[in-house]
Image 1 (cartoon, rainbow, N blue to C red):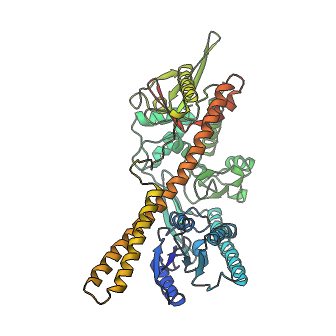
Image 2 (cartoon, rainbow, N blue to C red):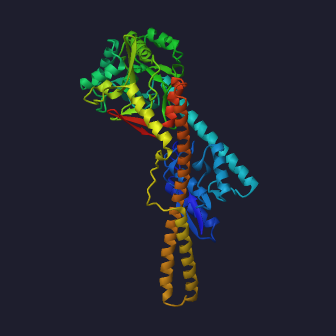
Image 3 (cartoon, rainbow, N blue to C red):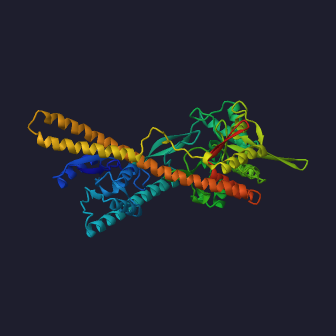
Length: 519
C-alpha cells in the first residue's frame, strides 16, 4: 500500500486559481497513472484555503509535515509547486525533511522527477521563480495601493469614525472616496473637544463610559481606539500649517499649492501588516494626500491635539524603578495591572492597580490599590517554596490525561493485530473456496481498520512524548532562573530582575491579596 499525502491550497492573491477540490482530483488522477500497479491510500491536507504561501505557518501544512516525520507518508503530491511553498530557503528545508524520511515529492503541473539530480535542480529553480512571483505580486499590490492613496482615493479597509465612502466615476474607472457622515461625525468632534480641554486619553475613555458614548459597533471606546481617532490626519484641514507640520515629520506630501484649507487629508502607510500583527509606522513612512471630503477639525486645533498627546505621553513615563512583576501581573478581572507611585514626607509609596478600575471605575472592578511590597513578598515566598521543593513545580500540558496510552502498549497491540492479520491471511489462502472465506475477509477488514486507528494513536503518543521532553527542559530552565533570581536578588538591577521574572512566569493573577503564579 502506497500512502500519498495530497496538499492543495487556493491562492490568496487570485480568484481564478484552481479550487481545492479540482487540485485534489487532478492529483488523484495523476497518481493513478504514475503508480498504476500499486494500491493507493490518499490522505488529504486541505484546510489551508486562503492562507498565503509566503510562509510555512499553515495548519494543514504543519499536519502534513508531522505525518512525514512520523513516517506515515510515502509520497507528498501537489498540483503545482507554488501551492506548497513560495520561499526557496523554506522549501529546501522542507525537502530535506522529505529526504530524511524517504518521502518522494511529486508536482503534477511541473512533472519533474526528484530522484535525479537534474529533477532536483529544476525543482529548486521553479521554487525560486515561485518566490519571485509572490514578491512581485506583493509589490504590485503595495504600489497600486500607494498610487491610489497619493491621489486622494480611499484604498479600502475599515472606514474612519465619522466617515463613509462613495463611488465616483473618474475617466473609465470607478473609485472610492471618503465623505463626512453628518450623523456620526459628532463623536469625533467631541473627542477632540475633550483632548483640547486638557483631558488625557484615560480620562476621555472614562468620560465616554460615564456618558454612554460608544463606537459605531455599539461598544465602549478604549484608549487605543481614541488614540487612533485623535491622531488620524483624515480629520485635519489641508492648510499650510498642516503642510509644515507633516513636512517636519518627514512625510511624503503633494504639491503645497494644493493645501488651500478647503478639504481634509488622507494618511496612507500609517500601519504595516505582517503575517501576525499590525504595527504603527514611523511618520517618515506616511504618505499624506488631499481628499475630496470636508475637513472636520481646523489644522491649528488638530496640531494642538497632537502636542497634547505627546505631553501626556511624557508625563506617563515611569519615574521610579519599582514593580518587578510589571508586564506579567494581571487583575482577577483579567485586566493588566500597572504601577502608581507617589512620595509623601520623603517616603515613596508604590501600588499595583487594575487599569480597568482606573479607567472605568469600581463598577467595573473593585480591586483597589495594593502595596507593591505585599505582592512581591508573596511572589518571592512562592519561589522559595519551589526552590526547596522542585518536585512540586510542574508544567502541565493539555494532553496530560492519565487515560492516554503509552507508546509501548500501542506498539504491543499493533504487533498482536498484525500477527492476527497474518494468521487470517494464511487461513484465507487455505480456505479460499470454503463458505468461511467471506467471514475471514470481514475479520481482516476489521483488523485493518483497527491497525489504522492504532497507527493514529501511535503518532499522537509520539507527539506527546516529544512535547513532554520539551516541557521537562522548560521546567529545568525555569527552575534554574528561579534559583539565580533568589541567590542574586539584592545585587541585580531592577530592569534585569523584571526581565528575569518575565522569563520565569507567563503571568501572575492577583485575586484580592492572593497571588496565583502561572508558569
